[in-house]
Length: 383
Ligand SMILES: [Zn+2]
Image 1: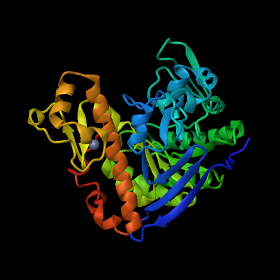
Image 2: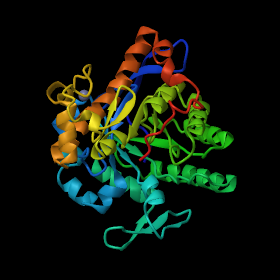
Image 3: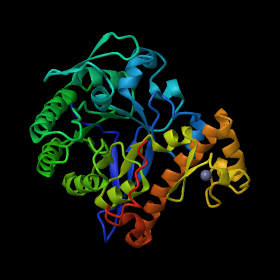
Image 4: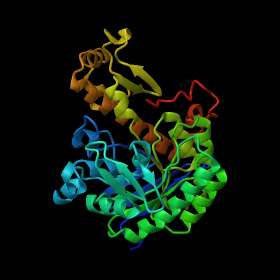
């Protein structure tokens, strides 16, 4: 069909005078996304350990779900029969689905890649599954998410220039097929800029995608194992080449530092499993630091995680209590940490938004905008 999505619009509200950061509002049929903003991940149609009410209370506006995982279970037919993903999972806000490309390339075994698509073995029952650009779009049309992503080939890091060049060309050809296959004008199809760590390949991919006038653009294939300074370099070089009046999404990134740097380069939205995954490991994100609640120092610490945090966890529970729950492996402990961690990363992006509007982003967030060779600040939360 086409890439036209009349119900979607990115409204540019303000721009930073010292960096390329910007404030915007992304309009979707299920509500707005005030940018910059972190988006929590609900891979299997739930943000792990949180109810939709709890997710909404974190300040989340758009959340993510995943085509590959939902295709494997429960299957898009069941989601569609339930009335679509919003109804199935009872989330009334905007939803973005990843195309499955990243998972097919990173998780599945025995895959065979051709220009037609990818064949792989289901990790659930060993059956052979065929993913093509058309199939990915067909699944996402059935799921009914607001933003759907093009099926792309995400090359590993490190990869040779030849490998990356081939994957980037294929990603473009697959995008054209995704546009052709897309059947719903109430869903916005975003293209994904690939190109590995090669700035010229990224630049060409960005120019080719921009010419298609899509409703939004993503930078993919970062945070796949490359060092932080390379991520920053890619994002800084690629973001200015994307159309300014469209939403810009950096995939799979969600540390304080990476988000601040990417926002300064002109990125609007992010997603990452970090806050919920850390919660399941008993770790809290507190004002830029990562704490292990199992540490002895918290046993008799009756203060909240963060006195300045408005979340349900910080308003009602102590570090000692949360540490006790985590040591005892009580499920409430994981939920309380997930509530706080997701709230914390969303608040971080909201604080940046306010700082951009007030004209002091570069000063107020100077700590996070320093170059990546500052190793202490660049410590990555990559488990
Ligand atoms: Zn909190």
